[in-house]
Image 1: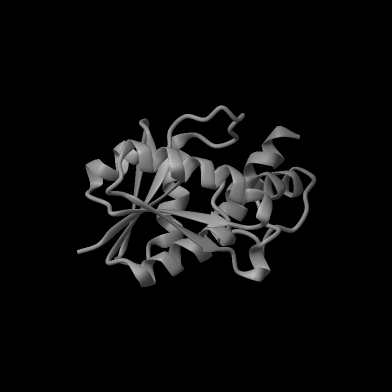
Image 2 (image 1 turned 135 degrees about the vertical axis):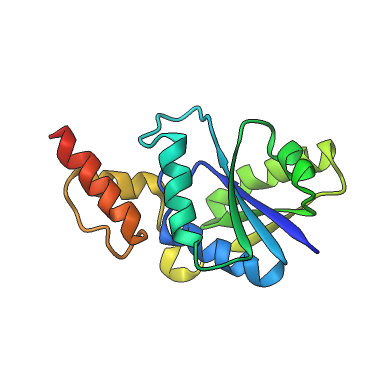
Length: 161
């Protein structure tokens, strides 16, 4: 059985993330969405909220599981028995950072490959940061995120005003 890890912060998960996850699930027997507990970014959602929202978004696919982690991605991948780390690329600007991370991960564990999946054109512009900004100004994010995320962000930002 082939297993891949798709790691990220997912603050929040977007339809672009889901596109990459679902496409990875066509390539691997099992895909674990690995949600980083900590980040050097200011997070809107707690780890519990992020896990809950990702689980809701992928609930219809038995090949996809969701876990949180607080280690190096390559260590988490090894612990899960994964042979690959999936990374989504939206634009050329993403590639430089992702390429450096892939090389570092390869140095840490040459048995785990990094596989890049290009964003579908309809999601190439999409980011969690953009979603949060639109939601903060009461914009329509319904086509950008799963319904549970839309409702969570509407609730979060309405309670802050």
